[in-house]
Image 1 (cartoon, rainbow, N blue to C red):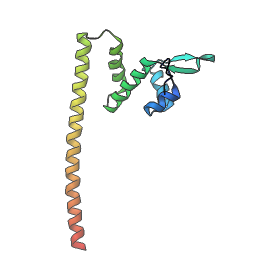
Image 2 (cartoon, rainbow, N blue to C red):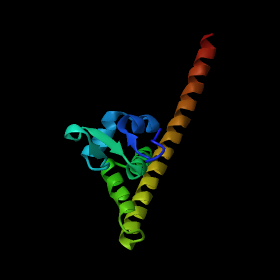
Image 3 (cartoon, rainbow, N blue to C red):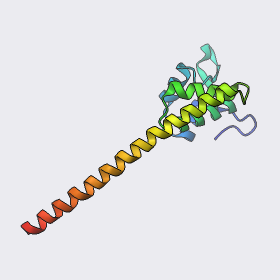
Image 4 (cartoon, rainbow, N blue to C red):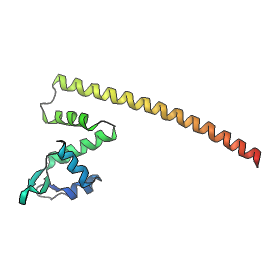
Length: 132
């Protein structure tokens, strides 16, 4: 849980809330997707503020949708820029369209595979019925 007065999370709190590992959070930091505040001796302790919390939610949503981390970074960075720039919005719409087309293709493949499994299951059951 975040600290009520400051809405700051430790790496352990953020990892637990989002169901990710500390390693994943450190990786996202290493590639520039997250930039927690570094405190303590040698900056070894990470504190995540509201911005990082929101960015992590967007990263994980992008991952669920199948976007590569590089694309997620580009899209998330748009949230920090001036909203509404036509080029940014066109880019994002293009990415959404590409991702949608990929998912539709996968859905078609999955549906075909399920039909083939149904047919195979029926033939196996029929063969087994003959043998019994």
